[in-house]
Image (cartoon, rainbow, N blue to C red; front, top):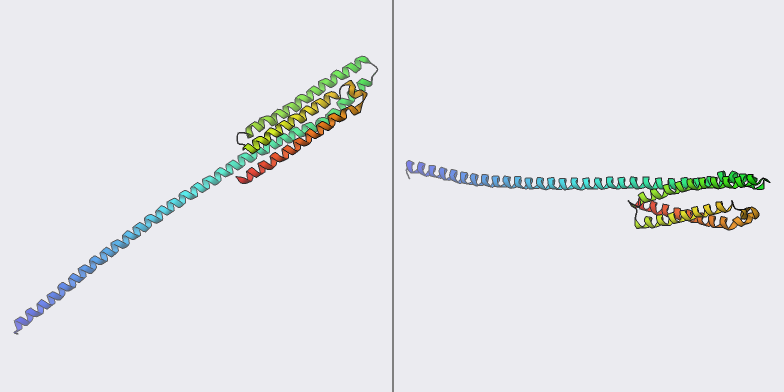
Length: 232
């Protein structure tokens, strides 16, 4: 083999090696590019998933916070109405107590003094005055009772069937107790009571019983309201 052939053969070998190298390089570069694109694609998909989950989580958090706010508002609204209602009941009871403990005794004493008078005109006037004062007391108690009734109507707008039924029972018991009080006070201004004070005992017994029913109904309603507030 002469020198020219050797050079030619050498160049051919070099060129072949270079071609193999560039082919392998190009192929490796293509593989790396494809791998890089795959990695970028996976990263993009991962970021989309992360973004989606973050958005869903934020949505759930907002719904949860909104639900908490709704429950808080519902609780505060109910608690305020329940508190106001029982405040009115307490005012009504206080008014009833003041009638029997503070205001009625002096009224009855004036009536008794008039009845013991030997002057017929004075005796008659004492009865008229007593009846007028009694009617004034009845009107005051009736106004307090109407306040309780109106407030119970407001509560019924948000009431459960259980509370609705307990409100009905309480309203019935309050009316019965009020009627018993009116009946007893009226009887105490009659000649039958003056002739025998023991005649008022049956009226007192009925009033005591109806008053106890009011307390029982009030307590049952309060417990149901507390239960429902705890469930919000």
